Image (cartoon, rainbow, N blue to C red; front, side, top):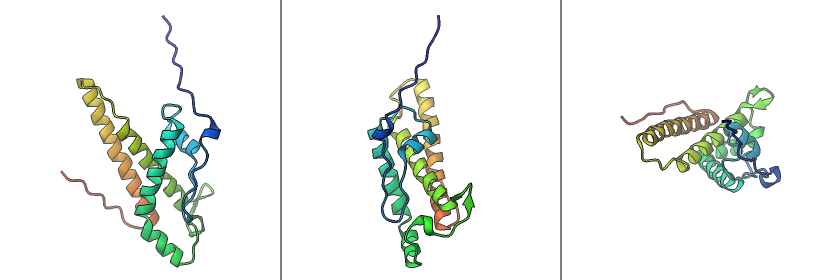
Length: 157
């Protein structure tokens, strides 16, 4: 017997236009984010866009004071803020994308948890919870890197 696995089709690229951000922050490309998260067609374009917007809102809110300070210093966009370049891209822009990507992945993982009540389902839920915690940690680290703050992430025992 031969098993054939057919991957879920990716949404049409025209169905996933770039998400324009607020005036200071960079736009986010859902297609690029989909590739980074290896989502293929498992998440609809509409659901991914909705989740990315939630992640963008979260990151922008966390960085409100940073944006205010940079604008007071005369910078109109994050791309204008002086930062080291890595592979031809501002580290600040890369960290912003990383934060949005991590929060998007965390939100999707939280929403897509299985409903399997078996022991196998419990183990899977624990693994997903651990992954979600790591994604939120990654997002917080990126946000703090942008803001130039130390990494003090404390978990309750």
